[in-house]
Image 1 (cartoon, helix red, strand yellow):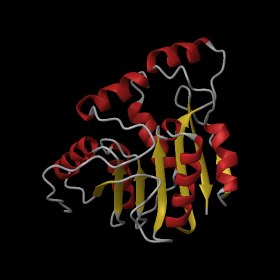
Image 2: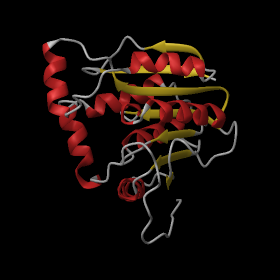
Image 3: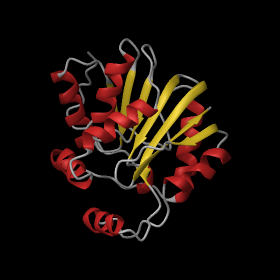
Image 4: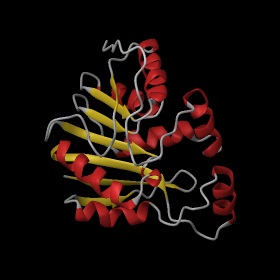
Amino acid sequence: MTHHSHSVERPAQTEGTLIRWAPYYDLAVNFTTLGHAGLLRKLTVDNALIQPGDSVLDVGCGTGEVILLAKTRAKAGKAYGIDPAPEMIAVARKKAARKKLDIDFRVGVIESLPFPDSSIEVVTSSLMMHHLPEDLKVRGLAEIYRVLKPGGRLLIADFMRPTGSFLNHIFIAFTRHQGLKSGIEDIQKLLKASGFNQITQSDENVLVIGFVRAVK
């Protein structure tokens, strides 16, 4: 089991949004997804095509739910979770300890991933990209590309482009994402510019959340 003995860790410096209300985060995600949080996590891990032995990194891991599930798929493969908020990392470490899962959680940011070049098989990012300004998305995707092994996969789960549908209006009102203009469809051109190929959007969605996979 990987333990870190930092008594009080400082939040990482990032230009993205820092979410620090860790004790309520899981509840908020379940509320936001109208009770579909479990399905969202399952489809994220399914679409990432994680195999036993894969090393997996979840970027913006929050309280660790996606990487906990990913680790059960990767089995002996190494699992990592990074988040800029120490509060999130503290909750994630407790969950991993309770489930006896060996996951290396670190306070860190997408724009400076603490991993060597070509060292990770799968990177996941769930409901995080929409928090980043455009230039930070570009820098973050370049970092993910750097740490992925050739043939490695990135799976992004995030909001699709807002539509005029009733469900969409309700959802945006609930989640207070009124400023959301772009969507996961728009990330695809950034992925291409970062060097990724085999960029595919899944036919499966969770409400207004979609999934895009890309290969290095």
